[in-house]
Image (tube, rainbow, N blue to C red):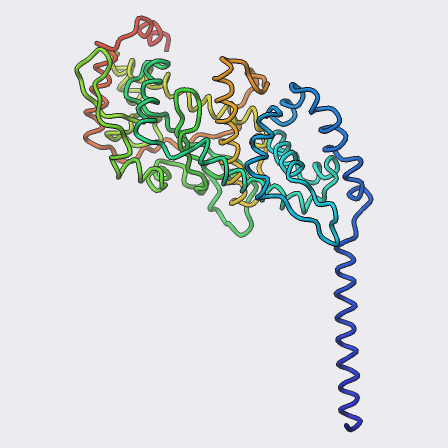
Length: 410
């Protein structure tokens, strides 16, 4: 071996040694933590507040997490395998699944920034974003089949019975509504998420039953698409409008021999169809009392969707501020919140009105979710006929004693 070859070997060995030292230094930096984070198991929220106090007080536990301890343990049992991590050389005591769920629920309940939550839970804000993303994904994966399952015809028939019993609107399987959820502008998204109210948003479409529970959801449309085209393009909308076997068979109206199809009720933002009812225009309702009565009865039943969105935002205050996560994570956040909302509603109904959470019903929430634009698209001829039949029913066989008095006040 000559001198030049020997020199090349020496230089190569030195380069490999430098690379090895740099790698070790990087691993050391990754394993190093600030004192605040190193004392997580001694001084963090989870140890001092949650384990030390909240678990002994069910009411305070509900105020903190929006779930009671039994519901918390139920959700944890479903997602634990998906979010639990084994220990490593650098992290001998990893964050538990219970702590990850607690952190995620607290974020949903308050909407605090990750940099604020890191001081309470003693977890770096960069890793909090990872925890919340993984936990929300696991909640959607496990809870959607339980609390927002694909509706069957039998289930929808029962929903229609509940609408007649509670809201005096027959053959109605649900109230359809769409809302803009405020977000921070996603990187390199241009004006895709910029809506007609001049802020960035993601659109959620929801079908709500008579008990303010979500039956079906479509989340993720761009904020700029603020009209009925969102419903027509969505997977749910295509299923409803193009596959008629989604609906139960046509049925007689109560107290009448008229046979009409089952319908969904919506506002002016949607197009009239055989299976989708919307109100008459204000001008038409002013000129015809029967149309005014129909509008009142439809609006009264459709109020459940507004109530559902109101409850959702009151319980999960993350919707009160622009959501600072990636759009795909925001989609999971909305879906997870709706699943937990249904969980709480079922508990509320089972306990006959005893709430599992507390909120101020008088608080103004009209600015949290924004309605879609009122462009209803083209109409369907069959839709006019079905709507006219409902209008005649509400003024004849299906009349209720208080409707004339209520319409006169409008």
